[in-house]
Length: 286
Image 1: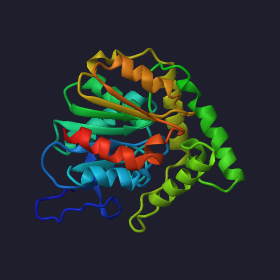
Image 2: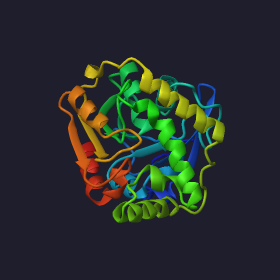
Image 3: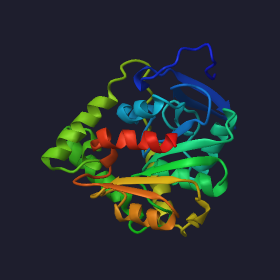
């Protein structure tokens, strides 16, 4: 099911209806908002995340002027099937979904694992993506990328012991500013109160972690294929995907722009959403 011109324009992510589309043997769950027409911005989400894990402050800022699409990849949330074992296979599914929606040109906003999938997608189909946003992510074969699982399990344990959301530990520094930003971020994720997505299954989460480890230990891709305008952003203290890998991407993607936010971690773009959201929206609108 896709929207049509008679549907009212949804401008707030919390109000975007969940739709379904079957392609390639998978029923994908997705949401659309913002004005239709033109090149859509497709959001590629992070490890263990579903449709409900996007910061509405960033989605809404972009959807104010652009057609935005978020989706659950195969085996995630309300999408059918099982989680693919590799980042490249996840990119294949994303391509299937995008083509089934009828798009041959898109812009991409990606975060963390979503940025890995986006890179793999462009390697497979360089002409599909017009403009690219890579946040909290790194290249295939990047230094210490394969240590994500260790950090993730450690922070999940810390969060369990303090009865906190793991994202407060994984995405934010444990100083007063980071703790406050983490709690505010988690609160924003719960602004949607109806039609929420199915939770991520444990087995799928473990498969994603394994896929990231394989990606981290793989032979680097030739990122010279990424010739489209690219915006890269991260915090200066990313413990999940080391911040130095954002600098590595910047060096390897010709003409890319790089923003490193001070005193912030993996979720630097969420901690600094007031500054970042309009920058991302303007970049994608150029």
